[in-house]
Amino acid sequence: MIRALARNALRGLRALAAEPDPLAAEPDERAMLTWFAPKIARYRALGARIADHVRLIGELDSVNPHLIEIGDYSVIGKGSILLTHGPIKGARPVTIGRFVYIGFGAIVLPGVTLGDHCMVGAGAVVTRSAPAASILVGNPARVLRTLTADERTHIEDTLRHGRVFGRDANRPDVARA
Ligand SMILES: CC(C)(COP(=O)(O)OP(=O)(O)OC[C@H]1O[C@@H](n2cnc3c(N)ncnc32)[C@H](O)[C@@H]1OP(=O)(O)O)[C@@H](O)C(=O)NCCC(=O)NCCS
Image (tube, helix red, strand yellow):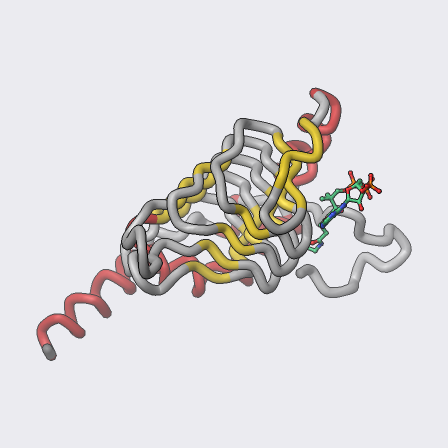
């Protein structure tokens, strides 16, 4: 028991040491990476595969976190969760592509894969996998439409430069989440 705890703590410390160097990022992104780093490090220590530049504001299932993979620059929004276990189908992986945006309070169920650039609306319950660039809304989530090439470029640009979607330009100091 004590040995297992020590092993886990050691993995956590290693994961913290492996965090991207915040000073190498642009100023806005630097602050964001520092903000989310401790939570990301904790989940990485439990086996979750979380790429660099991910904004993990929501939560991951603490049962089977090793079955979760999140691609570069994705945003897991406030109050949302990625689930990897359930009473009937048991343990199932969740795979989130790159530049995916998961809105406030969304629930992604076990077994779901979301392609790059998917966008999940606030409050959606995602029960099935979706191809790249799908906008998903509702419970159960349905594909509202597919993002245009221009929208995908805008999203990539915003995320790559560590900016916040829809922040009021006159209030650059307001909260980031
Ligand atoms: C999904 C989303 C990106 C779609 O934005 P949009 O393309 O501007 O969508 P629109 O407002 O034009 O709505 C289009 C349709 O989808 C529906 N819709 C939009 N968002 C919805 C949502 N979250 N849940 C259910 N339906 C939704 C609208 O009612 C509308 O339906 P209608 O055509 O039958 O009237 C946006 O609504 C959303 O949920 N953003 C997330 C915001 C958020 O969570 N911010 C905090 C993050 S931490």
